[in-house]
Image (tube, rainbow, N blue to C red):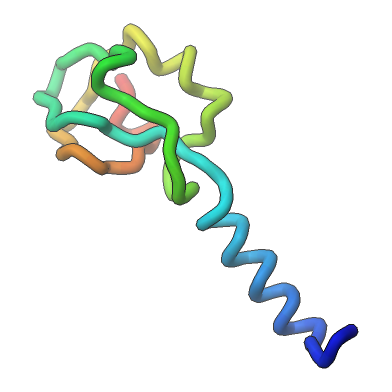
Length: 79
């Protein structure tokens, strides 16, 4: 156990869930209606947005709002 409590270990696991996993982010500022391409979205850490398995689904679709560079993608941004 090395002096760790069960609760402390659970907190570590939850933090790693967000900061260790990757998500899809905007690599550039975008205008509403613009198409998602390999040039304007990236898969990076931390994991605060859509998981990478959706990357291919998002390519070619249009953005519904005006996200700035560095925005974690969510389904409400994908048209």
